[in-house]
Length: 283
Picture 1 (cartoon, rainbow, N blue to C red):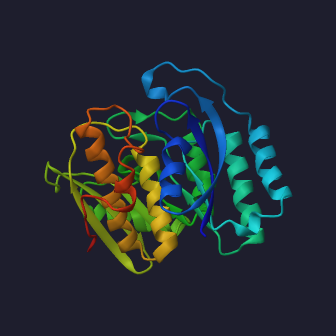
Picture 2 (picture 1 turned 90 degrees about the horizontal axis):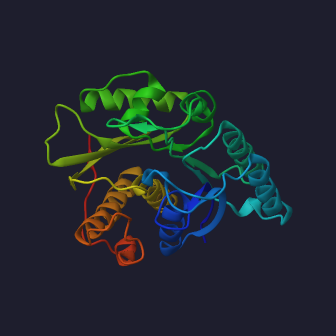
C-alpha cells in the first residue's frame, strides 16, 4: 500500500490543508499519516477563526515520534502545502531529509501556497522567499499556480509558451515534475481553465470548463490527487488527466449544491469514478 506523510494545516469545519487532502487520499487507497501545523475552527478566508498555530517544535516532535516507531522507511511520499511560518518550513525540510535517508526512492511533493493573480500575496511576509530560496531545490514534484510560478522563476507569462519556459526554468532549480494550475492568459478562451504538467518526457495540458466561483481547498485537493495518481502510474500525463477529472467533478458537485465548502464526502464517488472525464494532450 502507498503511504504518504502529509504535513499541513487542519480545520474542523470545511476543507483546507490536510482537511482537504487526507480523505481523498484515503478514498484513493493511500495510507495517510497526517501531521498538523495548525488546528483551526475553519479556514482563514472567513476572516475570523479560532484555534492554535502549532509550534514548529511540536510539529517536529510528532514527526520524531513517528520516526521512533521505526516506520519512516515505509513512506513513499512527503506532502506539504501552506506554510504558516518559516520555522515549520524547516521542520518539513528536515522531515524530507529524514524520510529520504530511510527510503531514497521517496518523493517530496509540495504545493507552494503563497498567493494568486486576483489577490496577490496572502502568505505571511518571508514565506514566498522561503519557498523560492529553500524549498524549490529540495522537492521532486511542485504544483504552483500561475502567480506562484511567476514569482518562483521571476518570469512574466502571457502565453502557453511562456508558461512552459517558466516551468522548465523551475524544473532546472529542483523539481523534476512541475504542475501549473489555473493557467489563463490572452491566448486562452474565456470558458476554459488549463492545467499543465512538465517533466523529463515533455509537456501536456488538460482543459476543463470554467466554474465561475472560488473554491477554498481545491488546490490542496489537486495536489493530493495528482500525487496519488503519479505514485500509482509514474505517468505525468495520465496523472494530470485523472486529476482534472476528479477535481472538476468534485467542484461541479459543490457548485451544484450551492455550498461554500467542498462536498468531499457527498461527492466521494467522484474521487474514484469521476462523472466528468478529461484527457491530457501533448504540447
